[in-house]
Image (tube, rainbow, N blue to C red):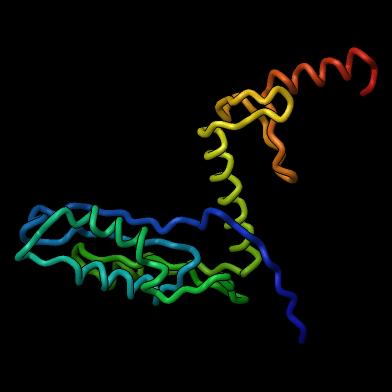
Length: 185
């Protein structure tokens, strides 16, 4: 059986989500109660990350644990898990949830069973997320119009997704009005 590989490049992976609750004894007597979720990591990988985060907490020297965890997730997670690029999605990828804290860790984790996705389904989620993040970044950054060469905030411009060309809305409006006026469309 031949398997066709589909290759796509994304700039923004689906997020690793850290949800938390601070118990009464935090930070000196108890770590934060938290849940990790990520669709492109397996449940086992998330459980390993959960255990590592819990291992960072020490009641003898409590510090700003959530900041430390968030920084570690952002800066070290990929290397810690030995993830290499390109990221290959298997036929079925099991995205997971891992929880810690609360009254019953096992029940908490079991009640948040992992979701199964086909590689195609996960790929589409990743591509949709990537496009939404690229659009958000575009709206917030400066761009140069390809017609008038003025620098304007992305919210005042339009970008063609396939080719990446970008123009300010004023120039596009003038262009389309000219096309209609001259009966070219």
